[in-house]
Length: 105
Image 1 (cartoon, rainbow, N blue to C red):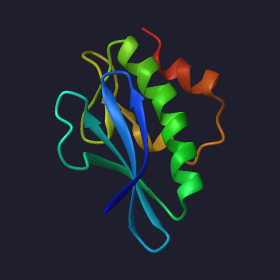
Image 2: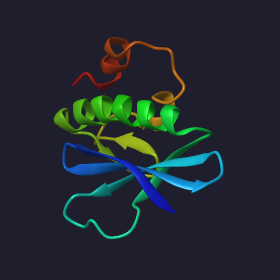
Image 3: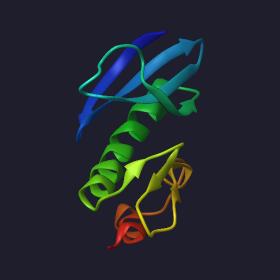
């Protein structure tokens, strides 16, 4: 696995890793423990899509963390709130502003 792109995001780092021919994984790892390649969030068939998804996910992740959510098993979780699947962030043509409404307090 080769790291192709890195984005510092809130308290974490997003990595786009090439895992094979035409296969890229977006992973997340805590900035406090930068060993390894992190936890896989999603796979993509080209680097451009993976980098674009990482940038978009960073915006949503930052918003979610600022509103008290955290990642748990590929879902955004918060006490007394319904979990939000991270898959709703990827491959979605839903504008950021609309996604942000899911994280209202």
